[in-house]
Length: 100
Image 1 (cartoon, helix red, strand yellow):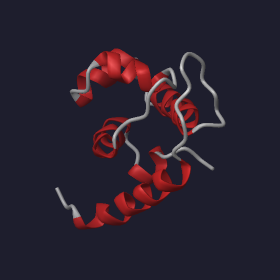
Image 2 (cartoon, rainbow, N blue to C red):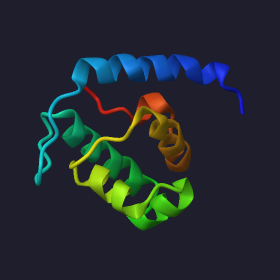
Image 3 (cartoon, rainbow, N blue to C red):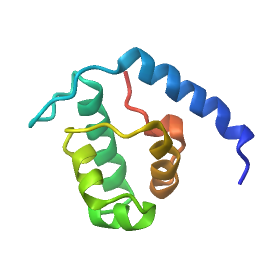
Image 4 (cartoon, rainbow, N blue to C red):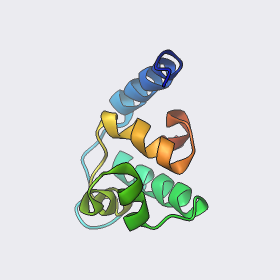
């Protein structure tokens, strides 16, 4: 698996996260926060791929409760989760990031 081509995406992700991280919402999806925008993007990409949260969990090896926390906007993924999620959803890391 070539890693050099992914470095630009990883650096883009780090820059984006640095600029947009904010306090996480507790029980609602607030799309003005990073967690909320990521949840919205994750649900859209997951639905487009025809995957349930359980199927995404099985494909990535990420616990279902973690996927559900991201999907609900309660938590944000760590940077090392982005390449795994992107691969399972059939998108690039850059396309996984929420739009500004």
